[in-house]
Length: 114
Image 1 (cartoon, rainbow, N blue to C red):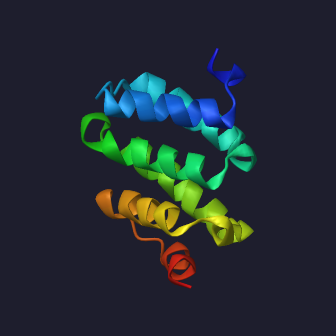
Image 2 (cartoon, one colour):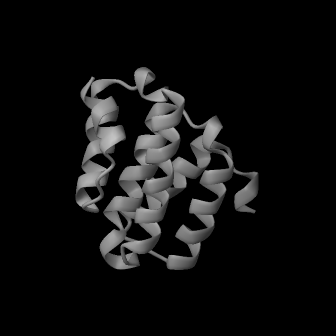
């Protein structure tokens, strides 16, 4: 059923589960896969919420899955120039998500700083 959710729905699901501290690994694994499929449909706020949610549950899930998703997001955002449409809060939340997972994406960070 998760493949019937819109990008906004996926983002909302991730936020809800993270805020409820419901870090079910299989759920987040399926959510990550679906988010990757729908990446082009996410608005900046939705992407940042997704990144925040995965970073917030990283301790409970283990770092591998959140790091994989954020790595994918970082590469995709670095390649598309989509960061230009992000507001300051979006950029701060995205940077926080990467920092929380101790992930370094120099191209993404340079683009955030510009």
